[in-house]
Length: 130
Length: 130
DNA sequence: TGCATATGTGCGCGTCTATGCACTTACTAT
DNA sequence: ATAGTAAGTGCATAGACGCGCACATATGCA
Image 1 (tube, each protein chain N blue to C red):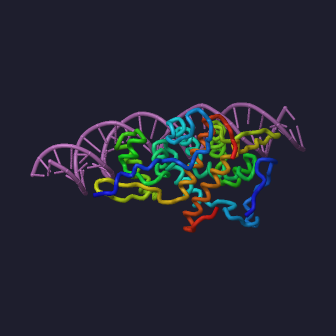
Image 2: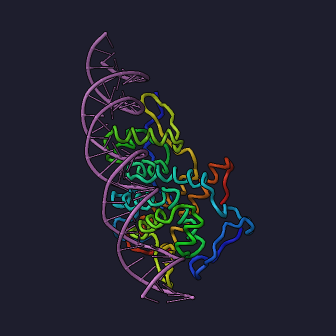
Image 3: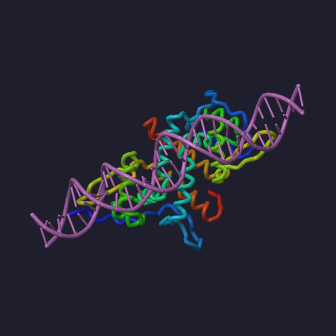
């Protein structure tokens, strides 16, 4: 026979919610949470956008700077930035005839770095650090 | 390691100069890295798949278990699992007439948790801490 | 004023993707 | 064998997505 159906519980170490009353933490992430998460990921899941966001982890930048570094056509960058703006991942500020973009949430920095880090690990075939 | 002051000043003047002090992470991710990263993210950027992966962060599970918890139709789950398998994010092992799925890379656990965590913050307001 | 720079936007097209349906294969128990 | 359960697969369709193109604003400067 077999080893028993592993009925292990999904979570246990994740949440850090000691006392909040409500639904508490996603022992089982509800669909809204998953939708939100997937939404964010969808924004990251595009090379050009990811590149843009990555650059922003180093601080605010203008569209021109972002465009130059990304190597993508202006219109394309503009559209991607628009999407990031509409989904609330980035903030904009106007300065003369420039528009300066920045990451809205500090959490994104971690996420993006983690992502790049993981990918780097995959590409170089090396165990990663940190 | 080193870190950078992010979120503070207009850190303009970005350049692709490779003379910057080397760090653990790539200063400027090349297209291959971005492609890889985006590829992984694309796999995560779907509510059902994310749910499946999230469950796997708690340990290996059979298709039936995954299906039950995700609430999605069997075929759909199967297809998503197939995709995850083909992209190498998960591993499979056969046990009787069950197929047991598990995350291949421990790094994914971090990435997934970070993602869910971020989304949770977005949904439950904006604590933004940690 | 006029012109160049800087950025954003509506539109059409080709491509990718998730889903549901029907079918097949693999294993188990009777 | 036969039936039942577990899991995977090919196909067709509808919708989302990225991109290029042309055009529209906005700002700064001569």
